[in-house]
Length: 626
Image (cartoon, rainbow, N blue to C red; front, side, top):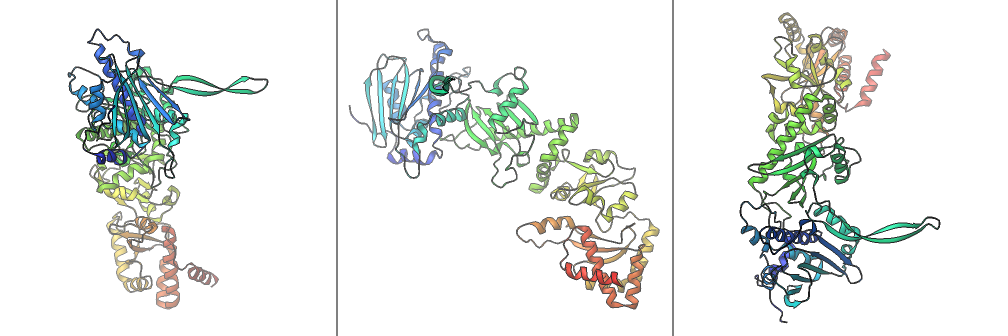
């Protein structure tokens, strides 16, 4: 028996495959099981045309066993097996794939899914083993052959005894090191979990002897370990079943088990597409946000399968950020995988699938909004912020897709409404969509600026999420109606007579107002106004940055220095207006104290911090005591 060198290039190439191409050691079992499944597929395919091969598909299976003492894992199949020549070509030549050759020779009408196409998956086993034995008997030969290798040193092939056709692969697991615990692959639970994770939907039974701790004598409370062979994998994916044959409870149980949730999903979306790209998907909208959803380490993505084999646990390319809350799976044969099957190559098919999934999710949400408003409100309270973020993100590129899905609290309806509902119920000749921003509905409702708009019988959208104003700014207008913040310094809701009266007062009081502004340099302007009804003062803004936006910027970890251009407005019809005019003429010191107090009051109403609360508190007490 002569040792042979690998025909593929060099030791360096094999070392690269073992240590660089595959980054996750766990996938070795997936690769070997996939190869075994391919061998079963080939045999079954040949049996359809070769009368000498008499098999039933239900008799084909994959068996797995392990031996802790001898540190071995064995995977066997009853597939087509390999001849000596095929062992030489497929295992002696790195990157030579028998599955790929078989697939290339199939006709277009043939419907057998061949998973292995690169011929390198087998070598991933060297990540966890220091010796691999392959014993195979081909359906085309009477004699069996044994292939053995310890890695880059080469391999041997010799004749051996094997009664049945098929292939048996035995791995000798490496000794543990400080960095790697290879012994975990000799644990029953670990092996079962790898099969369930990566190969649960292989179409042939994967059988394994498992141990059950069973009560054998109830009186003596005696237990024994009972060993029996079980089929570990499910074989038929839920998403490949006819929807009418699947109960809602099955979907719910699948979701809870697969995605480790404690509650059933809010919405199940089962979807199948055939055409330019063919795939099946099973998507879930959770009933609550995952505990780490707003954590920077949260990973979005759908589980990606090819022919029942898990390729990626979380394929982020399949979901846009604004739908990152969606859980689920996609199963397709139309993707171009790279050599390790761990990373997707960018492809037209992947982009098509992603676009279709995005469109499907959006349509399902639109349907829920129209047909089950209560459920949609429940969804929106949990994930609405993410949709609004999607509108604001990417410079508003996705606003057209999402603007009809977002909701805001209506001052008139006293509930959440859509932008469409707001516009449909606008007053005659109303040209603007009015909104007000704050930390809660109650606080927004008490803003002095809201009072004037309500008096005119206009509805106001209350924006209570930090991202709301940024989303509204990105949308700019809806059905030709521009958005207007009630905190804007110029709402233009007064009559001509009211405007003329206020303008004259401001012109007459220009020196007073200038003196106030010099005392409180943070504001861009101080003026009298007629927009306030019962409130003495308020802060409004001009320009692109509102007061609420400034709060968001101020809360960011890195000081951005972005400030709103604030205007201090004083109610010309409130007694305080006459008071400060008198003080300006008769007592400048008192006038300055009142100026500071009024500005601080306006900041408190707006929810802005007061820089010198002790000073202001003392001034208020001093004024009250007089």
